[in-house]
Image (cartoon, rainbow, N blue to C red; front, side, top):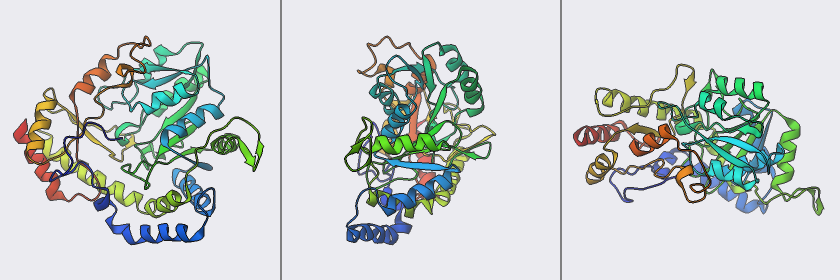
Length: 373
C-alpha cells in the first residue's frame, strides 16, 4: 500500500504501473476481452488455471484465490481455528492490514520488535513474547526480503504455533532456495496493483501444502458454501474475480524477469549510494534472494531529504509514517513500545523502483539524493 505520497505528477514517479507492464499490454487487453466475452466472472476456469499456476510457482500443492491480501491472512487464521482468546505475534513494522486481519477474527495482535537491518520480525523478540495464549506468528517478508524463517520455524515447532507468512511484498522471493509462501503453515499474498505481481484491483491468495486447510479456505471465501444454498459454516464473500485471475496469469509469466530487473535496479542504487555515510542502506542476508518490492534507506534527516528530492521532481514515499501500534485502533490497547521499529519509522525513505525504470532514471535519483544529503 502506498502511503505519504510526495506528489503525483512528478518527473520521476514513485511507481509507474503502465510503464512496468508495457511489454504485456496487448496480452492483458486480450485477457480482459476473453473474460468479458465469456460471461463467466466468478469462480470459473480463469481462477482455476491461475490457482494451479501460482501454486506451482510457489512450489506448494494448493493455492486459493481470495479478495485481498488482508483477507488471505484473515481466512488463514479462521481456517486454523484461531479466534477469541488467542494471541498472534505480528511485527511492529508492517502495514496495518497484518494486525487488522488478526483483530477481524477476534484474536489479539501482539506487536514484536524487528531486526534493525532487515526491518523484519526479530525471532528473539518473538520468543520472549510467547505465552500460553499464543496460537500463531505472522512473519512479514517486508520490502520483498524474506524473514528469518529458520529461526521462526524453530520457535513455532517448539511452542506448537501456526506460521502464516505475510508475503504481500515478496512474490517470488526465496529463502535458502525455497519460495516464500511455501515455508510456513500457509502463505498469504496480496495482488494490489503496485505489487510485484499486481492485478487490476484488489486480490489475494492463500498458498499451502495442507489440502484440508486449502479446502477450508475455499469454503470460507464463498459464504461457507460448498454448493449453492448448502451453507456449512459462517464464511465471507472474498473471491478473486475471473478478470483478475486472467490478468495475473499473464503477469505471472513475466514475474521472474521483472524481479530480475528489480534486482538490477536495486544493485545500481546500492553501488551509487554505498559511500554516502549518513545513509543506511538495505543489506540482504546471504540466504535470502529478495525481490525488491521496495528500496528503503534510512536517514536521520529523512523529511529534509524527501523535500529536496521532491524539488528535483522525484516522488518518494514513507513506509510507514504511522506504525500499527501507534495508530488509533491500537494505541490505547496497551501495546508495548517498539523502540527499533519506531526508530526505523522515523528514518525510512522509499525510493522509486519498478521494472519500467531505466538506468538513467536511477542515476538521476542517486545524484539528487547525494546532493540532498
